[in-house]
Image (cartoon, rainbow, N blue to C red; front, top):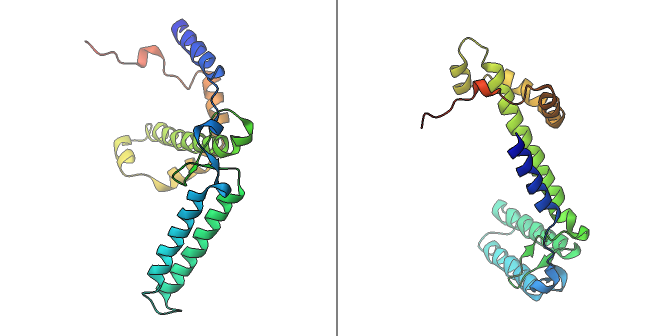
Length: 184
């Protein structure tokens, strides 16, 4: 346990002292000022307009391509109106150098990813723990009991609180006597 705490402390210390590097010196420019970004927009729209000429005006494929052209223009417009920085290739780059003015580009999606992946893991763990007490748990693992799974999924949104409660009560970690050791 001491080694774990020591390793955790070293890991957290390494995270708290990041090396500083700034994207401004990496050749990135605002997407609205980037000529390659504007060229990429023009080429994307020209490709779609070339495809739309193959269809009659007002036909379903032509209408779908018109919608795609509008969505493409809107996407590029959102990128150019935001604070995203583009490289020489004209593509937006996420800046993760620790400056708070770029935090919304990475921190919020990163936290959402961690929350959703934790939710999936927690619900899967809860489902397996629940079906392990049934008469035929292996069958319940292969053929999922959908009503039970939906019930567990609907309660999974509070997984951080549930995980903390199980951790503090000692239910989260398996006792050493239940951990198998390889004979090697």
